[in-house]
Length: 225
Image 1 (tube, helix red, strand yellow):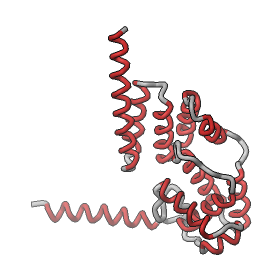
Image 2: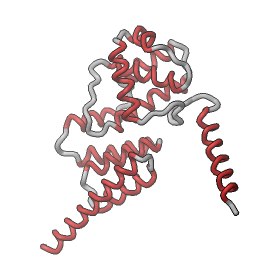
Image 3: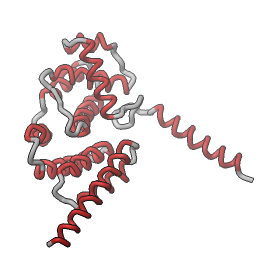
Image 4: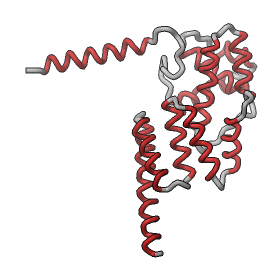
């Protein structure tokens, strides 16, 4: 029995190490490596809810929402302490739209935005709720979150309204909008023209990537004897 406990302890220590490596990889946007690290941690210790939660966050960042929700299902299965968090994640499996999604759909559609951009806002909301992890989420005023999502999607897709204009549409304060916009950007690490949420035909980031590749090739040629 002593030897067995030693093996279990060793496995748990290795799993914790892999989990920490996965978190570092996640922060560096090395999502494939992060997912692999979390998978290995889960293989060693399959009943640690945090490993599944971190896996879900990495999968959501990579755009694999189906697997992310499966990982959340395992989190719900093993999480025994934070019942409020379990309930929050259980809501992600509901068939009906939540209050924020209903507002997004109504307001953005009425404003003439495409269904693709409405879908991008709903996608952002899903990813945000997963990526928050164990941090609390206050949605007592869904119009504030809906406004922030609408504003962010417009900004990414060059269909901007001012914060004042968006605030009037949703009946909220500009300060509240600014706070939630910052929450979205910082939590999801959103960049201008972010590929995850850009729904235009030509993304300006493509030109930057192309220019970087050309520059790299020119540098190799320049350095070549």
